[in-house]
Structure formats: structure tokens, C-alpha cells
Image (cartoon, rainbow, N blue to C red; front, top):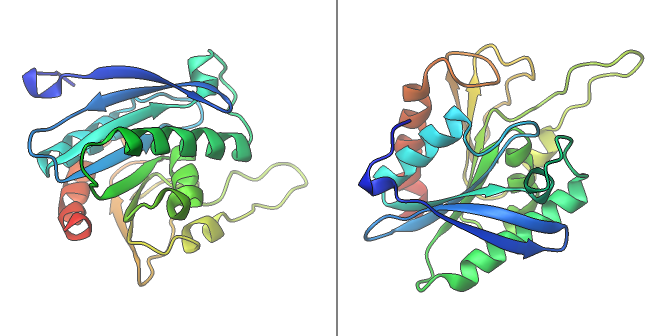
Length: 211
């Protein structure tokens, strides 16, 4: 994705209890809200769906921060355990909020693993909404072990939630609820088949949750 003058990025490293995290800040003029997004287990913040969502959010007046977890910054491919991921994420978001000049609405989210972290920590960081890209509802079955649903992580979120899910995602399709909108787009777990549809879903939903 080409970057122009509107996409000036500031990279800032933040100390967390789990090591150094790296943030990629994409500001906007007359910012209305802040969107903080995390990456998937084996990928980084350059994932096409994250970039599409970030661009859509900026078009709606949201400053965007893409967060690299400490294990990625340290060069490790395997993610840390959930408590470590959550602790690092909370530390980053708290630091970002403390640095803001205005008390802006906060939306958190991410793709796959990053979406799970955002769901688990949404209440603690004070998010007004959660954006989930390719939520990994049910991991692939392993020999001798049943598939375990992660729907409970989604259901525990009390604020408005958007799930953008590929129609052929092997991890399954989360159901909608009174607070959760589920938008199906072409493609699989990578959400690369129709980035325009990903962006359109984000742009349609964001104005209603940031006010």
C-alpha cells in the first residue's frame, strides 16, 4: 500500500512488563478517536487487512496505532502466553492514553490473535468498541483433541464489536449478537481477497461507535 503525506508514521518503542513493544503511529488532523490494533500470531503490522482497516479508520477521523508485541520485536516467531500478551498490550495502551492531549474515545482490536487480546482486555483499558479481523473462533482440530470454541472471549465483550470474517475462514464464523456485528467478506483467514470489503465494513461501523 502506497503511503503519501497523510501517512506519516512515527515509530515509538514502549517498555512493558514483557519487554519492549513497538508502536507505529498514524495520526490524523482533527482526530475524533484512537484505534489501536494488534497483529496476528505469526504476522506483523504490515498485514494487508490491518493496513486496510487502518486506512479506513483514518478516513473517519481516527488516529491509528499499530502495535508489535514484545515477542515479535525480540525476533521470536512463537507468541507468548495469553497473560503475557495481555499484560504487554495493557501497558502499551495505558502509555498511549497517558500521552494523549485529549480524552478521546478508544477503540481496540486486531487480526486473529490480536483480536483475542483486544477482547480479553477491552474492559480494563476502557475501550468504547472492539474491532476483530479474522477472529480465530475454533482452532484446527489436533489428533485426539476436540476443537475448542473461543466464543466466550467474544461474548465477554460488553461494548459494540465488529467482526470482519472471511466467508471461507477455516476457523469458523462467529455468530452475531445484540452488541456484535459480523460482516462476511470474500476470502479465508487472511482476508486478502477483497480488502475493499474489509475497509468498507470498518468505515460503515466506526462512526456509530465513536460518536
